[in-house]
Image (cartoon, rainbow, N blue to C red; front, side, top):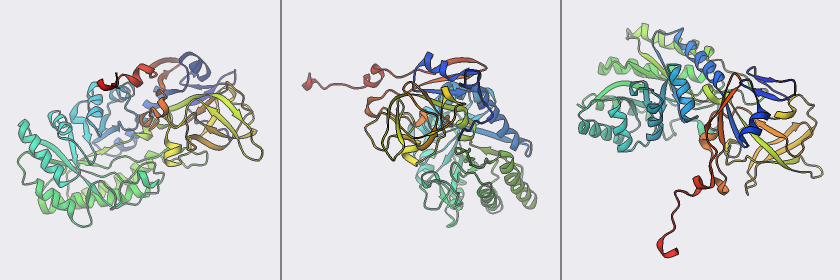
Length: 437
């Protein structure tokens, strides 16, 4: 089934265009496999997300989740839009700083932050969302050593069950993340931190999962988080000026997926916040959100060249391309669906049932199974959609395959924003011990 979201077009040659650029020409010029990111789509997605919440609440901070795609040019685009950053490692933090995002517009998340990472975060005034009692102690020590007061919040686990893959469901009690709310552990964390000299308790954080296409779990998250905010103010007299709801709004990958509009989520979540603030006489906090996939997911495609075709009676034809799970692991890891078409035959009738496989020595190395495509021949250009998030970011060098290049397109212009890896890139960190020379 041909599916083209409205930011994709076709030209008179029957080729797919992205950001005004002909994908066939891009592949011929830059080679394959090739990631292509549409700059204007990134900007459009950010603006829509921000407006959905900022039109309903006076203080909103959208922190782009670098884990989705940490390419420096992509982060620079979002810095220019006024975005903050959600980081979860030293290098993500450094990338955000390099792109010009100030530390006071960042949140640092994760269940294992090293002393080195905490030092960098505290030194740059990044809000650290503490994930355990031991981490709280570590933050206090780092802040004392630096002679600073660390800005902290606590990641709490509200036990919200979201309809998503279990690997990316993060708001359950059994999850590795956060302080448990139901047992009182989260409240105890705030009580302990209130007595510490080197931390400034300013926030609360939760994240219930990724790729969620239903607004109800977000409303439940808001109810549970705001109830805790009110309790902390009432019992500990701590005003939390940052309420961070994480990310998780999904995108439609399949042709029949229902799109979740950020306006739908904002209406329900902000409604909860308004009610609790009014009922409890709270100040109006800054609402923080951490979208990644929603911002960049459908702004990216992956182009791959058809190498070989293998027909077998009674089963779909195997089509081997030059990108596999080394370039895009989501189908192999999660069983994730990504829509696939032929970029050079985008308007031709789909008449052949195929499995699209990569070049790696793994039976699980496939990009899609049982897909209808036009008649495929060697040299055709396969396009895999919705790969802007968790595509190149999760790629590998399995079977010594170089990671793909990435190109940014904007109104017909195209420029490399990540070079294709070379043999030298794959081997430059290797060393042969003296006894083998």
